[in-house]
Length: 70
Image (cartoon, rainbow, N blue to C red; front, side, top):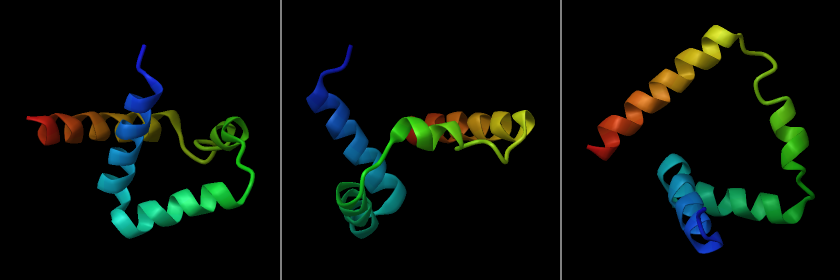
C-alpha cells in the first residue's frame, strides 16, 4: 500500500505532466473552491463512450506510459 505522501507526490507529478504548472495549480484551486464528490464524478466519466473506445484509450495510455518510462 502506498503512503499518503507518495500518493500526493505521484498525483502532483501526473497533474504537472498532463497540465503543466499553471493549469495544475488552477486545477487544485478549483478543487479546493467547490465541493467535489469524486464518486459521483467518476460514475458519469465514461457514459458517452463505448467499451471499444474506452479500451482503445486504455491501450493508448499503456503504450504511452511504456514509451515515457523507457
